[in-house]
Amino acid sequence: MSQIKKITKLIASITAHFAVITVMAFVVLMFVIISIGNTSADEMRHKFKNPSFSGIGASAHWLTIENQEHSREETKKEESLAKIEDAKREEQNTTLARFMRNLESRIYAEISRQLVDNMFGENKSKNGSFTLEGNKVDYSTDGDAVTLTIYEADGGVTTISVPVGSFYF
Image (cartoon, rainbow, N blue to C red; front, side):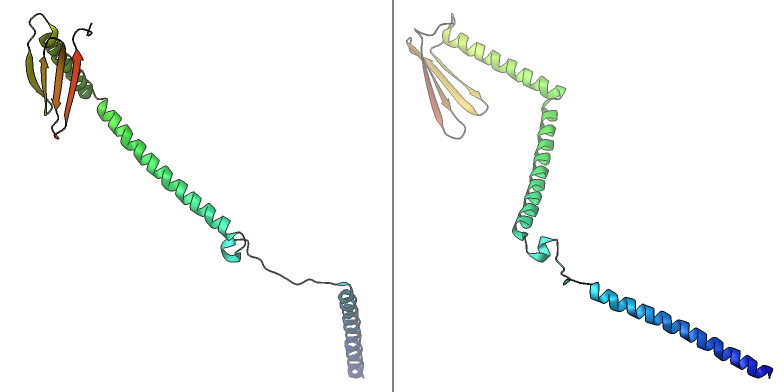
């Protein structure tokens, strides 16, 4: 008899569990049915934000990219030109370069002084010539005017005539 009682208890337990599971399934099913009635949905749509993919505003996007690339190239060019100019300035600002410019200026001043003395000084000469950096300069005076004729190295000729009567220092 004890085995029948055990079997009966087991069947009662299984039946009780089955009943609880059935009630729970029924509650869940009712919840799902009620929820479906109150639920609404819309169509899902995907849109690319990048204009390269969507095509919306693509020309403005590409123009912006082009402008950025152009600006960067211009900045690089300006930076390289600035570096070259800095190097040239540094080269021209050395002690030796300043000395050479000063010496050259004094030599030209002395040549100019001698030329003026030859044309207008106490012992003035009627004509003469000299060569300066590959250019030949002839000068002559007829008492009324001094004429300078410059023969350039590339073949060009320049003539300057200065009236002596109105030329004062």
